[in-house]
Image (cartoon, rainbow, N blue to C red; front, side):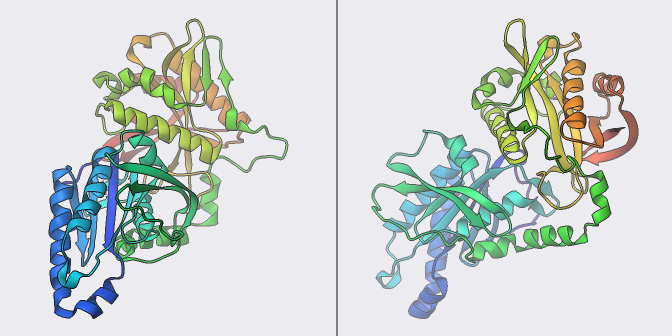
Length: 410
């Protein structure tokens, strides 16, 4: 059960929510035999999901909540799960159809398990579907790429309006043996998967309601002036560098940086990233640009067009220190973040690139306050922050690590 002290995987994970469609009708039709249906359903899905490397986060009645460290494993689990269910002989010859929803993100792992909008998003995707249907978010679809299980195709269902999380581009994973066309998604439907996300939804709603208008004095970026340039495709140049919006192909040159223990020592959780995790990181950078019109730039050296790192702007919720979006309600802090690959250290590139990002935020986005979050012990990053005019303001707990918060006021 959720919150039983089991250590769930952190970092980037793929969530899989499932529940039986029409469970009330089945209960009425089967009576006492419905208990056997639920027991068989649990046994079949547990066997498949655990074989695929899944971690059982929660189960409520006829619903499951699992997490996977790899998106492809989660997709395989969902496909194999649907096939196991369809091949099973159910009591009374009844048909048991289960809907499934997949979403990949980077939730917080708290004392009671996973916390954050990614959990809610996965549950909402599941509840929008129909029995026998597998739905996946755009992030999960991108990570799986063309490596789909045998006999599975992808159908683009377009952007869907989901309760609490607004719009999500949804894809259907179709099994060739089913040959079934499903009705339009129940984009605002309810299911038992939603009940497992209810606590998270309540936390989000309460948090929004408690925010004060005065908190927006800390929010960044400020409202854009009518004559402000559109930064959506903004490219910055310095004497030696070009800072441009990221593209998926940046994962290849950035992978060695994210796999370098010394570079990652003071970044995030302090662990190295796999190639797949680097690809996900780049996809999130791209999503940030699409949502906000700014974000982390891929940083390129002019003399040889070599990608040397990523530098730019990160928007944080200071209550949770989770990333947020510019149009989200509540307080925000805008950070100038900078990570340069180790072969390029000692050349002043971090200061040069971060200075360009700072000026972009102040002059073109109209930011009134910028921060830099620096894990304790990262003296080199502190030196860069001070060179750029940031001053130490206070210490914070950033995830599980202590960090210095440096600030710069316009």
